[in-house]
Amino acid sequence: MGEWVPDVLGDEFQQLTLPLEPDAEGDVVATVVRALPEPRPWWSLRDRRPLADVDVLYVHGWSDYFFQKRLARFWTSRGARFFALDLRKYGRSLRPGQTPGFITDLAEYDADIEAALAARGDAAGRRLVLLGHSTGGLTLSLWASRHPDEVDAVILNSPWLEFQLGAARPAIAPMVELQARWWPKDAAPQVDLGFYTRAQNEVADPEDPMEVDLAWRPEQTMTVHAAWLHAILQGHRMVSAGLHIDAPICVLLSARTAVPRRWSDELTRADSVLVVDDIARAALRLGSSVTVERIDGALHDVFLSRHEAREDAYARLERWVTGWVASR
Image (cartoon, rainbow, N blue to C red; front, side, top):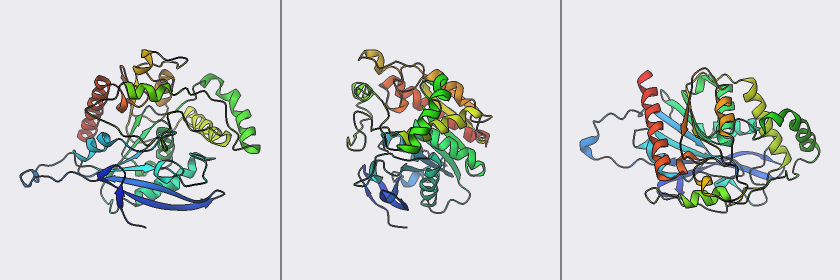
């Protein structure tokens, strides 16, 4: 394994490149980022931190990468070790000549996840919390169901657990499967006018600023290819059939959906990506212990919402984590 080096997020973070098996496009890597906890004054060293035995692994969504400094600080300030994974062909892991985000089976990410977990170092006696946003939430849910003995808690930020046209998924899936088999890199029809990015910019919180690399997180979503969409629909089918995550699960969602046909202020107070009522119902199929938190005024990424909704999201996360710690 290589060496940890400074990360683009600054002195608080380091990154490690994780070599993976090459594919038809050449060498493949993932990248794990770790947050460095702030030094503690000598008089506080005896204070027990509630998450001192916890490791957190964050996985981003589609057309995205890790850049949320405050989210990392939430965990490290409570004693946890925080790691974030830029999956293959995303963000820090994207290499020249590669098709951004392209994959044919979400299970291929098992190698990325396992490499990131190995990069933690000594994990004996430590509890593992998986934290996923959107497509990352779907990916981690499937992984947690396949690895029940390795996960202690799952936290999902607007996980993409069902297709936006969920009722039509059984009819769409066979056509997408055929296209994926014969023309895997065909572009799927999509319309993204950049309204979600605009909404984030309009509600940006000066107390929690974000710096985004548009090469890694473009204003309009990356091209969706047939084989990737087929992999997503297969994941949705498995969620619909029911997963078996033994660990307790917390799902954070906006209170409502807004359809982005044209720009309006409503898009700054709702999820314009997913149908949140469908996601809330699908979440109940993940396991036997699921808490669904609906946050008024939240965007698709609840931690990038306007100030009031953002603070509400962190308060609900704090409450759930506190209860989880107390129950162990």
